[in-house]
Length: 274
Image 1 (tube, rainbow, N blue to C red):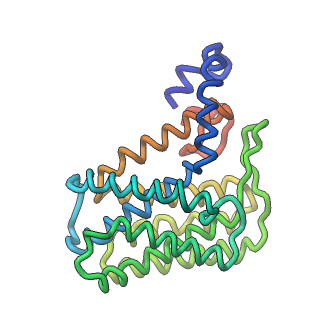
Image 2 (image 1 turned 30 degrees about the horizontal axis):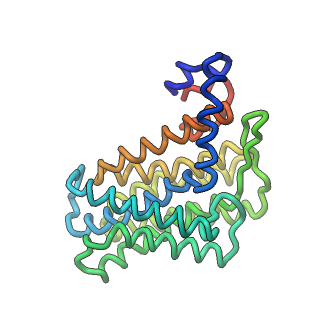
C-alpha cells in the first residue's frame, strides 16, 4: 500500500494525520460503507446479466458507464438511508437464521433488478438466467455465517465460533458447483467461470483445520472475483470499485494500523504492504 510506505506507522506524520482521518471512520461505521462492495456488485450484475442475454459476446463495453454510475448511486442511497438503518442487511455481523437468509435473497434481487431495468428485453428469459446467480449468492452468503471480529490491539481477526461448519461450508461448495453447471447450461461464461473459481474456497475452509485465514479467503475472494469478472463486461465498474477499495483501506490503516481490505489475509509486518 502506497500510503503505508509514504507514512509508516512509527512516523510522526502518521500520528499527526491519524486524528483527522479517524473522524471519517465514524462515517464508515454509521453507514456500513464496507457493505457497498456487495451492493454495487449485485447492481452491476443486473446490468451485466441483461446485457449478456441480449449479446452473448459483449465484452469491455464502456457505453453504459453514465447510466451505471447513476444506478450505483440509487442503490447506495437505498442501502445507506433505508436498508442499513432498518438492519435489514446484517450479513457478516451475526449468524443469519432462515428468515434472515430469505430476506437477504430478496434484497439482493432488488439490487439486481435496479441494475437490470431498462436493459431487459424478455423478463421471462432474464428470470431463468437470474436463478443461477441467486444460487451463487446463497453459496457466498453461507460463508458469512461465521462472523469475524477484529482484535484492535493485536490487529488480528478472530472467528467467534465454528458451529455447523460441516453443514454451511459443504452446502456452500455444493451450491457453487450447482451454479457452475447452471452457468454452462444457460451458456453464461461469466457465471460458470466465477462459480468454478470460487468453488474451492469454502471447500478448503471445510477440509483444513479451523483457522481464520480460511474464512477470510472464503469471504473476500469470491466477492472480489465476482466483481472483477463483472468488470470484464462493464469495465467502468473498476473505477468506483477501486475508489471504494482504497478509500476504506486508507481509513482503516490510520484507524487500526492495518491494511484492510487486503489481498492478503494476515496483518503482520510482512503483509502490511500487500
